[in-house]
Picture 1 (cartoon, rainbow, N blue to C red):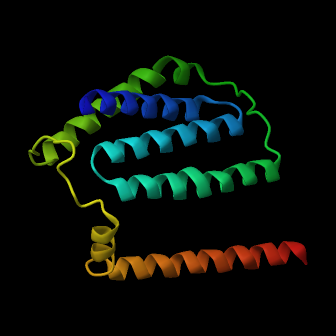
Picture 2: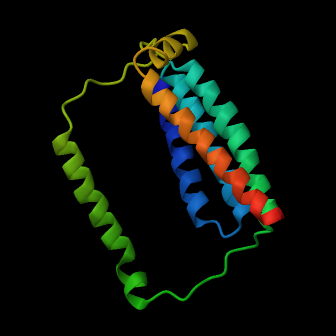
Length: 166
């Protein structure tokens, strides 16, 4: 049953991702991104990472998507206008994309070591206690560096917004 649910939600995530790229209206793209985030949260749940699934929904599905929608509304973005594509792009775009993905997949598969299969529900590293323990011991330096980078980005946004007000 877990494999069937995994395949269903993986397909939903892929369909929503394609819909995200193909939509002409930004609000529809944002809704498709919410579909991708929700599907990924279910996939995390199926793999036994409950904390990561809830963080995915709260942080990305909630806060970041609200921010995206506010920015879209603030910019008053309308539908995307169609552009004239070259005949070469229309004719050779999809076959070249498929060839590129096939070659990239071949090289990734050749470089990756042989991995064992996924057994659903056997991984117990997704609890809040385990993530906190690893985050504040093994990954403390990258965590602090990222927090400083986020602080710098926030200060930069405040400075840029302040100049526009003046």
